[in-house]
Amino acid sequence: MKLSQKTLTALMLVAGICTANSALAGPPVTITFKNLSTTAAATYSVLGTNETITNANAIPKPAATVAKGGTNTYVVANTSPSNDLSFAYVRYTIGTKTCVFYTSFVATASAGGVMTPHWAKNITYNNGATCNATITSTNPDGGDWSVEFTMK
Image 1 (cartoon, rainbow, N blue to C red):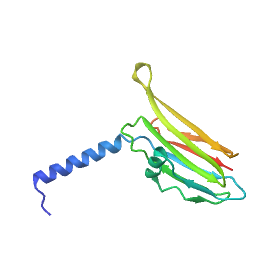
Image 2 (cartoon, one colour):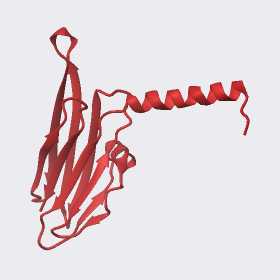
Image 3 (cartoon, rainbow, N blue to C red):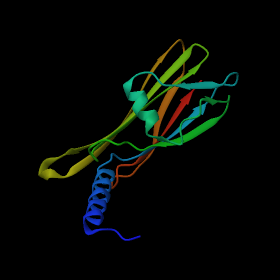
């Protein structure tokens, strides 16, 4: 197949833009959800914009249900326009109990312009749910991190 110089230049420009955009994506987070219930499966659901964005960027998609005592692991690779910000929101329900888990990465400039990484986690729960979030690993160079969410 013979490409014209104009077509080849256009393809190289598109490839460059795609590469630049992927280089600016926020760092990925590896999420491990553990259902500590001994009686029922946990159901994953999406409600709201942040949870929708998280689901859209998850690879593989979170399992719709996690069996009692089961585990589900997936990666959320954010498409933030900045490599200094990344987040994930996930929601699980067991019966009437609900846990909404949140984790984030933000790099902020410190004195002298050095970027300092910060990782956070948070939980919202109701109806007697027992929820926990633990950041299990961090990478100060790339920002990627792992978090474990548990529920019972």
